[in-house]
Length: 233
Image (cartoon, rainbow, N blue to C red):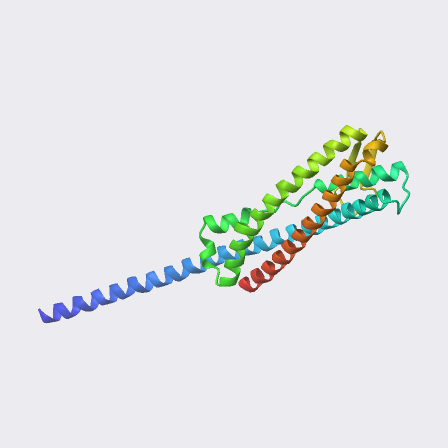
């Protein structure tokens, strides 16, 4: 009886250890699989960040052109320059083009959250900065963008009403002729009015604020990219 007990006890221990070993290797395999999924998502996030940085750089250039035009008009209205009507309308159109604004891609971050892969990120700094960028900074940016766009939509409507301005904007910053004036009727009274000067002052203020925000976002994206690379290397 004792021999049977020892025999079956030994077999039970062997089977139990076999189950534990199998569970261990299965857990390790699953862990590797989930880490690979996490790393692939981080790689996709890096690609998205690269695309967004390019987009930010392009919008910075566009906004800088609009700011330069608003400064040119400001100097012209203050008598420091003497622009032709064609030049005035070109610069007015250029200021109106500041309506274009940056829209971030958030799909990969949402995927990390919904799949719980974000819990597998080792760097607490990376997790903190991811949540801060996508849950705070970009939401704040979205609010500012709506306010910004509302102002320039109104500004461009005033241009259509008062100058009958028809124009095309090119968003490719590498092209030579980025603004095409199709038709306008110059309105000297409106151009020299306090209303237009007020719009111009507000345009300069908004463009400068948005440029500051875009540059800050670019820095945050670049920092995040470095942390992502550290995570998967």
